Image (cartoon, rainbow, N blue to C red; front, side):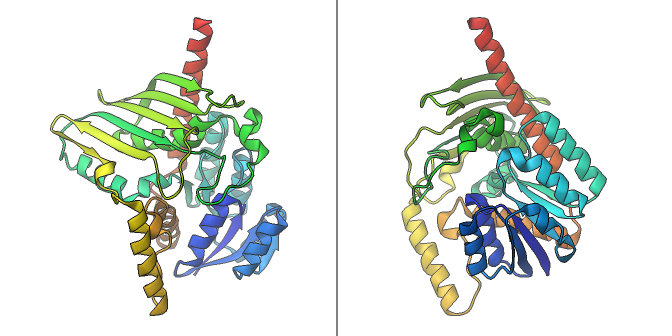
Amino acid sequence: MIKVGMIGLGKMGTLHMRNCLQMDNVKIVAAADPSKKALSKAKSAGIANLYTDYHDLLEHSSNMDAVIISLPNFLHLESIESALKVGMNVFAEKPMANTVEESRQIVKLVKKSDKKFMVGHNLRFIDAIETMRDSVEKGYIGSVEVVTIEEVMNGPFTHPVVPAPVSDWWFNPRKAYGGVLLDLGYHMIDLFRFFVGDSEVMFSCLDHKLNLPVEDGAIVILRSSDSSTKGIINVGWYEKIIFPKHDFRVIVHGNAGYMSSDDMVPHNLYLHAIKEGTKNLLRKVIGKKIKPLSYTYYYESYYKELKHFFDCVRNDLNPIVSAVDGLKTIELVEKAYGFFEKTSNLSS
């Protein structure tokens, strides 16, 4: 049985908590969040040890094997460092940290700790993405020439189902560090690396369609460090889209064919949600384990990434997303910001 502590019970922390509650041989023994409302939900879920300060949770680390950190970006470095120092295996939400400097510190801490550490790059675990990468590696479309990856959505403004207030830190450049490029672009850049390996930034353009202190649109062009493969990244926070619709796709063009994730996901997400919801209801009635978030298709990847992390802890394996992956992704994000700033200064 893997005993887990939850650090942060916001939107992502609550999602991870619910997924853990559905996993065999995983038990949440403690949770920390400054919100009494959030802790009340954790208590209702059967979590006994509740704290308003995660440092207090870590003082009882002898009762835990791992922690899941889902705090605002600017708290990642300190919380990850604190968890590793008390001997915890750590799953941390992306971005691993706000800056390259902070990310390098985390890489050093992870190596020194010799503990399992994984960053939440959940898009790697979407069924369509796993299928596409396997096909690319087997050479089904020949040599990869161009990869187009995009995701445009509401951003932090509304919950996919129920509108909710937005935390102030999202729009504070000193705390959030960036906007949609760091939020969604981080995922897209990681996916390009997932398909082609180490990469370089060739071009970037940031938009402020909504007049925010941080960018709400971004386009980045990448190039593989080892080949001529190019990547086109397109992300935005400006689209009013309601769950279960999801404006996300990956198109891989090779010299012997192409693949698109649009051809591999359910064509009707509403019908898919009804079918999977009905299957889960029947599973529950006959006493079988449900498949959490399977009705959402895309969100099931959050369950799969956590399951992978716990399997690595249990079997002493290395997670497929490492601290080095988090660092290399942040390096590209930071270079994209730097490229845009440099070209903007030249044009002005």
